[in-house]
Length: 374
Image (cartoon, rainbow, N blue to C red):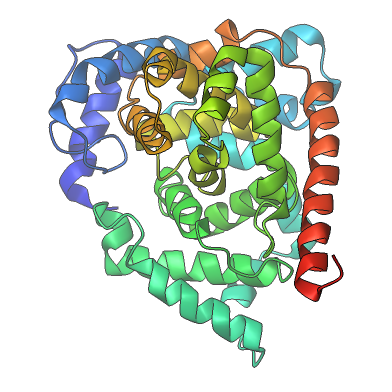
């Protein structure tokens, strides 16, 4: 990682996590080396203060890392008090210094290594293939490398570009049914940044994200998973914010216009990086329903402004600006988890099944039209 911002960032983080210093201003870079505006200072300060309180729970738990690791791996079978305690810790934010440990354990990376072998990652990125699909993936990855977070010093460096290339090649070959899907470059780059440039960790957490945390088919060539999740998000909006949902429909603002980038990049291109890290803390622990809570929280934060707007492009601009400026991740997640109310997984499962049937029927109809059968 580039040293020009890292030493200042570490000083800033220690000030908040230890509670021993006044808040420090960071006028150029955030905790992960991304450019941040000066006027985001107060929002970031509020979030850091809240996270510092949660940091004590992490320090206490990690006094016995072996026991805590067992609690994470076996959390579904743990008692209610333990499950609630760990969930609160992840929702409150994993301290940056413990994020790699937490993410790799909650994603059971050790089990993945045991199953596939320690050399699996290196074998994937270094292998040679004559397949046209692999050749196409390699070419697109090369195109996307330079486009990926050019303002972030590590990602833009030769070291970062090489690491990102290897992770993306490995992911495309680990998931041949997906190959390389544009937007995964932002996901992989973010993983490298959050996991201190550890390629193996980034690769294996990335596989867990795709296989276990996101709705299936999110990155398939036909993007069927994205289409299903978009319709599911619309159902959630109808349930939890019906006035806003009716207004979007009246303005002919399809929700896909807003959520496509959010879902495909898992917010990594939309939110400030410190906010993305907090969202991913909860996503990796709780699963894909977190994405729907966050979308709803974000849209409700600008609901009144959207309701005063009648043009779809203007609504999209409002929502995207809100995401870009959402430095107070504590506020975002407080609404997502405390203000929205109950969010049973069975509701999402039901809506996803309905959405899948609708998406499949729509695509079959369009295919029939193209064939001239209709």
